[in-house]
Length: 173
Image (cartoon, one colour):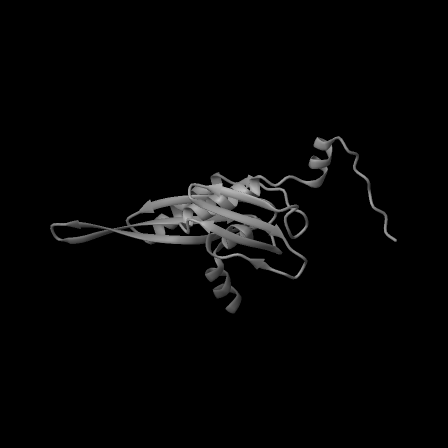
């Protein structure tokens, strides 16, 4: 029972994918009879194995907005290059006024990042990383900047191949 409640709070899990609600915004339109509310939701979904996507949904009810955003995030899932439980190298991502710096971290460090960046990193499957957000604190810009940073990552063998160097395998001592 406690596990079900914990899963419900962490995000809506279906099979091997995880969905995290990053932000819900309420908008009010003043009409003759009072206020009419509408909602928008920002959702990040991933498979915790290198695939992640984001979605934005609008509706007159919160549940409908989350449902639309979740469907949009599943359609936009892309592959990200990871190095075990962390990222291969330091990277900076930008979108609009939002900037984020991500650094690889030693095993056991955890995810040191907040808000939208943490949701993206958890959904993609990173376990050890240090992140710092600069500029805009707008949830959408932070999520998109984090995704831009993750898409800029390249694996070690690709970098060595671009430099014209050969890949050497290390042997255990």
